[in-house]
Image (cartoon, rainbow, N blue to C red; front, side, top):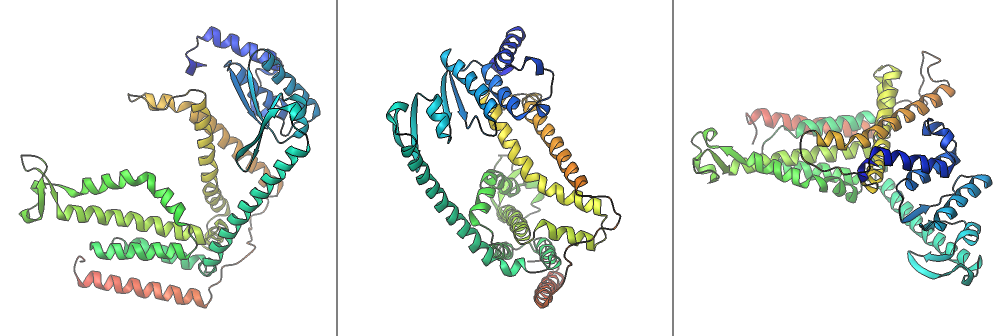
Amino acid sequence: MQNLGLKSSEAAERVEEALGVTGLSGARDKHPYVLSRGQRQMLAVASIIALRPEILVIDEPTAGLDRLGIQKLMALVQQLNQSGTTIIMISHDLELVQTYASRVIVLRKGRIWRDCRIQDLALPDEMRYAENESEENSCEEHSREESEYTQEKHRGRFWQGLDVRTKMLLFLIAAVSAYLFKGLIYNLTLTALIGGLALAAGARPQRIIRALLPLLPVFLLIVLVDALRCGSSLAGANSDVIFYVLPSHTLALTKGGIESGLNFLWRIFMMVFATVFLTTTTPVEEFVRLLHKWRVPPVAAFTLTTALRFIPALDQKRRQILDAQKARGAKFEGKGLVWPFKAYIPLMVPLLIYSIVLANSLAMAMLNRGFGFTRKVTQSQTLRFNAWDFAISAMGVALFSAELYLRLALHGGA
């Protein structure tokens, strides 16, 4: 309401009207999470009614409702339509479409197949035919995705079969090796090697590119800032200067600065590829077993690994809330120091509530399964080194030792 610029009195009037129409006046002081499924559906409709839209789009509005709930919700939708609101309903319920729709558009394979009055459509045969075609198309896409996943899993099976300690050792070697030398060719070669290792482990190149592409402006800024060196820090190395940015010769673009910026960029890529390799080949359960092996308290280990699982769920919920708030007219761009905090309050509050509810649901589920009723925690599987673990670990240590020897022998690196 505030995003629409309505006065408090008018907003309160619309809220009362929407609650009255949906029959929720008696539940106005209740938290949405204590409402029934049908009441939450009505509440969603009430939040839209209060905005008084000319067009209302509802997607599978009767999903999860019983017969009485469907009748109440569709009676309300009919009432809105009779009062002048255009209703666009997406549904797979053929009986519902036949009962309430006046015009139907049937989609098949993402294209409009029929657009006609409900009386002119031979229900249910034609719609069932279109529905079956859509299901076949979905099955083909699912089979293709499953085939790609199987190929990736097969490609990385060797690395997935290694012990988590071996993969952690390789990760640490890659992290330290990234800072051993300053040579551009060395860092570029090491980046390519770690990237190839991540691909061999089954990582999707498209996912890596999608993750790095939004950060491209940041990477360019890093290279540019590092390439600009103060003239006072050149210490007589004027031959290294490409050109001066300022007339006072206090800020210059140098060849060494560009190499330093690119080195920093390659190191970022190394860490990204090493992380992708580790997370692609290592399930969270293996990290739990490793923490248990290191005698980390079970509660701390469970909290850490559960937090890792929460991150994707919370990020997905953040995007959903952000899209919903933008659809309601919320603006997240503005000037001033206070504006970002004020703008993101509508995003952070529901996200915080969601995280609390999610944590509470998880706690209840763990209590129901007896978590915490014993001091001794056992693992379903134990960590074991096999011959390949010893071989890969030995190769990694030998390679790192050679790098360390060259680093010390060159007194600062090439």
